[in-house]
Amino acid sequence: MPKPIERPQMVGILTVLVAVMSACTADQKPSDTERTLANVAKNIVIPIEAEDLTNPLPATSKNIGKGKQIYMQSCALCHGMDGHSQTALGQAMYPPAMDLTSPHVQHWDDGELYWIIQNGVRLTGMPSWKGTISAEDTWRLVHFVRQLPHLAPAEGTGREGGEAMEKTEAELIAYGRTLYRQEGCFSCHQLYGEGEKVGPDLSLEGTRGRSAEWLVGHFKDPTAYVPGSIMPPFKNLTDEQLRALTLFLLNQKGENKNHE
Image (cartoon, rainbow, N blue to C red; front, side, top):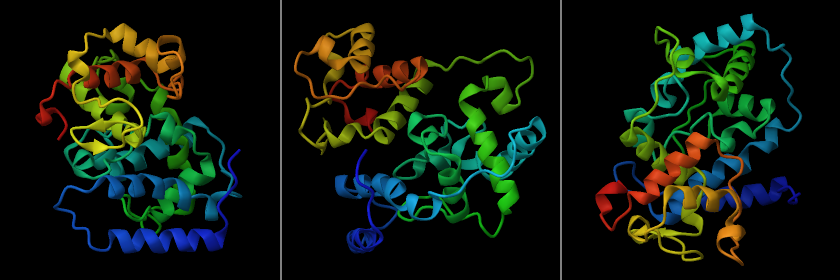
């Protein structure tokens, strides 16, 4: 386990973050550093207040139902009715609104999710709901967020008929773009000049002749496909998420319009 960041260290880190971000405007594309800091900010500020919080409400159908009602009223505008955040407003944010079904979000415990909803996260588009959603209703909302990865599209969006609506290829590519950012792929790979150079440049990944099956297998077990690879396995991603990320990368053929 990594050593937790102490409160004095946190003050120093946040001071640097504020200094770096102070000259940023929302109508300009952020730099690699800004994007990285904004994503890191979510993870480093949460534990200070949330480490001892536990959900006092049971995960009953009544509490989950109330949480869903609150979610639809307050959260769906950015995060989408299904939690995937494929909305115009959610995608316009940088970093984009978090996919609430992703492992990145679901690994946070209830106390951390509660803290985020109540306090918001600076340097991102996530506002504080403390003055709008009561503490009790926030705990109900946490219960519903926990259910999002397990809901069929009909349950999450309110569609009639109960049949799951499969995403189109274009929707999967857009979802893959979100996952690429949220899972921190840019911290090791470059895409059209943005990101780090630890691993291969992915700007032309779609021209390398690798199949979707090869890429999915590589995501799950990198060293089995590239001996000596230092890339971590992505076994925590769902099959749909792996497919979306794969389609996004296969769509990268040196045309920057695919990485807006």
